Image (spheres, rainbow, N blue to C red):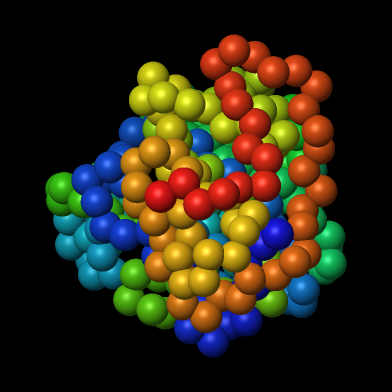
Length: 248
């Protein structure tokens, strides 16, 4: 199951909290299917303090659409200053009507953002950036499908199973996320998990236990299901979400 974004004010807003204020390591994953070509700058996800150019409004994590159906990563490193990169070498020019599982992991010690596709094995591209993200505020808004001011609406896309963590995932952890087995407990850095597996009306439950449930505007529930594989193993510190009941 998934949520469909048609470019007309569709979004899922998980709220503005201190928990989402992360300027260090992070990993973020989702399933994505394009049903057409998004416009340049269409927003897949944003985690930001605001939309102005002050340092307190900086974004720690953007993914938006670039030309030829590629995905661009952005973080802000000062007032009005960005680190940006379009992921491409060896990676997907995203075909229409095909599901992809995509992972980004940022390592601030190494100054890298690494992209992975479908099973999270070898990286398909690495962004070697110069300056770490900065933000002098205390909270950030986490949203799918548009920026926090309602602009840069995402079109021609379906999204499912989003995971947000404040650690750099290992290869085993990336495979677990790909298989929809989500890391549990604060020690594993899990900040948010939304499965999109059930139609909860205008609410998308946060299944991480942190209770940052999403407010859905427009983005229609869709029976189109990503090809999530059955897990090979069940490590003791992981669990697998079957089709989800409301965890609120």
